[in-house]
Image 1 (cartoon, one colour):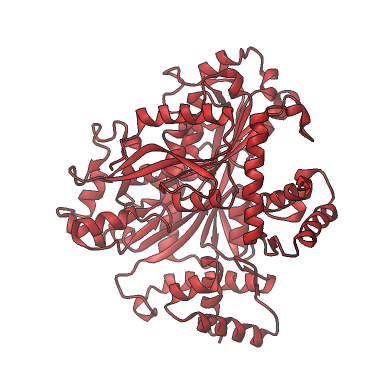
Image 2 (image 1 turned 180 degrees about the vertical axis):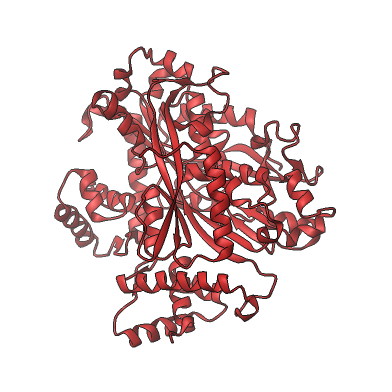
Length: 299
Length: 299
């Protein structure tokens, strides 16, 4: 059987971003961490780590981490916490979950607050904010137990449940419209445009859809709530989830630039085939919340 | 004089996170990027880059990047855009700014929306969301033009203006209080606690202040708005900026767990000594907005 001490050392080096931090997490010395990694590589005859700062897993390392996530799931299902090392019976189980920032800011909090008190005290969430495409990669690489991604493709060893779609509308403030004398959408390409990050292509898609142009002047503003506030303050226009609009349109704080237009981003709950009963309960609950808050996914 | 093509290549490799992406940014081939870095290192007789993935600057590399930021500031002040390569007169100047997530979600959007239309169309913000301590390091390393940090210490070549303090209150939802039968603050150490990231020690400080304990059960939830939503949904308790409370206390969505208690996190605007007039206008405006929205800094 595999010596899981070795895989745990590999997992800690990757998740903590280095040997020193891994040693603190595992309560062992740094040289003990190195020894475990070397032992793993000696057995395999191949490296599992690329020694960069932070270190990254080789293809083989990724397969091992992916396997480890599945074993951890099975251990959750087994639910015999007394067998776990370094944990007492009161220690909750860690669920690492990667999701896009707009989900984090809108429907996901409610979905994670599973109503059952007993379960609520048994799951400890470690949420990672990532662009949808990168969240999917983290799942593929075996770094997380659950990921919320716009890709419907299950990863190797994984399954997928459709959640629904976040609907985005093209939004600006009345001040922005006045200040830039905006009368036609074709002017937008030259006006300040908000993007969440370099991966956020929603604004590009919007301009491409309306007249084949692209934003020439973009502010990068990586905060979901800040994105809305920046629009209200008149820093730029952009695409905002309808979930975040609240009563801003009614109050006249924000304006829908093109009422007939929207972009739907579908979201899928990715999980491992070895899903434990606790995580199944969580998934079913998340699907219920998403069903109420998100739009149906178009076929 | 220094060949700034070489420093620009170094800057692009660091900011883009690799040689290939740097080459795309600079519109040159990847081998031309490598050649420039080698040329720089041959001249200096020392490496400027640590070849990790992503690459990081050596101490000498950091000094060069810090210098480059200051030169760029001077160029902004010179305001003769026609001299710039690869830019036409309509290209706005990029201002790289690092700030903490709670600033991004609350008072900063208004501060960046400088009222003057002419200036608004000349500055393009590239905002980076970082923990206060890391934001300061980015300034030190010459990666950003402005940083908002809780440290009052100017970096080498830099100056500081105090902005004010974000006030944090200990908050939970009525459901959370009921579900966990919370009657005394001493129970909190054992109940689910929300932390923004591994660097967020506010919740630890709170428990240490009230009875010398520490949170034993933490959910990591890296979204400012999501943090508040997770509290409302009952996922955990935590410290929330008063700026985010809105009317949640009045509406009974959230409860102030300890009305006499708060933690103030002071914030400082860090900038380079070579500050351009445009960035000075921005700073003065940000100080005004912060003066209205933040608490005074305690001496």
